[in-house]
Picture 1 (cartoon, one colour):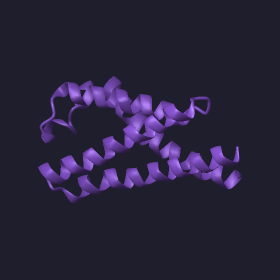
Picture 2: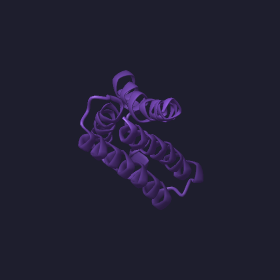
Picture 3: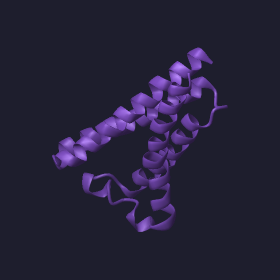
Length: 124
């Protein structure tokens, strides 16, 4: 059980940093940089701000232990869709292999977090 919790928290911490802290920090500390990743893909500025807010809310939902399981499921789903569409956007618009692979790597880490969250809940 301890091993499952360690794996869950390592994976979830990476997601918290990548999908929550970094985007929020950009929005708060360098708002002019908030649209750097979405503007070249053709998305309007408001999309970047909305995406950041949704990512932060999703990360909070998966990382706070007292959040109900259904809400965590929705948060994992939302983060998953965000990462899949990031891959699709980069594959369609700029075909940069690095930009295409990064969301898939983060998606893999998110899948580990999800899987181990389910293991912890089943044993808990």
